[in-house]
Length: 470
Image (cartoon, rainbow, N blue to C red):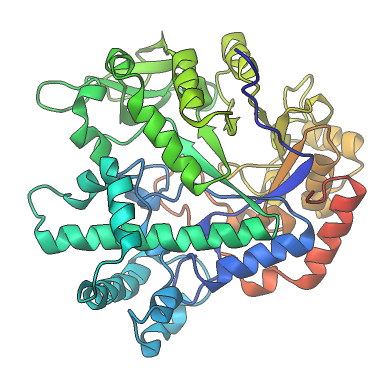
């Protein structure tokens, strides 16, 4: 097989969704605050900025229910950048005062921002198309054309042009931010959900790649089997792939998808990596995931195709959940780092125990699907609290700092901490609670959170644990 691994230096990262940046306009974006955050990471000696998916935001405001595996979310466009390009007036940037701080208010934010994006498009439409725009449209035509004509019954030439413009601007602003980060030693980690939504453009335009019924409804859905936390299992509602069809085209869709992700990010976390070995299949008309079964997936073929397309595999395997020896063997055969979550590491003989983390792994005190460390501590039983105190010499009032200090001290080459845990924040700032439909993806940082003093303290800690940016 040869060397397919990607070299990870011993380093640290911060997990912060793009939407959670400070902003004057109601949601984090690719504008000035993103650059200030990069500056803050550089001053703290942090190597990695990990984000959640940046595609079009889906139902429930979820970044994991996107309508495209390729497009970017236009709401992440910076109004300041559009103004600098002469597409908006300076007065357009004042914004509603109640959008400048606090949680993301999706309804109000959309009501304010979408008309301004329309205004920017109107201004741009009268200009001569640049060579960069034409090159972008040609290069990304394999997904851009399908995205531009949605929804099929309502599009017109003006609407299609608008969609191309927004995606071009997203790419342009993204490339500028990524170049700025690279110059300062900050690298970006993205996130690719393994499945796509049933209402996505991908399913609508490439139905032959999915297991659908003649009427277009999913014949097979994906999910997770019942466990101690959920007697019905988890029914995600994503249509399952037709692997024979993917094999017949040489996994071209997967090649294009991962190439697109690595046009945006330096490294990509593959959400639900288990699905590259096997997937829980449920009939399309099922009401829950109880009556399903595990079916094999051609993971080696997929990863070989991706490797052939892009060279080494700068991927992180999200190997959480129903992990089997076969899943671990697939991960290890390709040299991919897996994930360890310290909140699950204080029960006897835990896979996630701090001392059990191997060098080729990514250690997190908590992920975006966990409670914050402060919230986690408050919900712990007495025995787990005792094990935590003995293992870390930590106490409840310092649980967040104890957790990230413990993560930085592990053998793992990479330790990534949610910004909320660096700040020692409580349950109200939790990013996502799986299985709940509301109240997720709304927390947002403030400028005051990213202080110079906090960056200095973090820099000292990373220096002491040999994790400073190389």
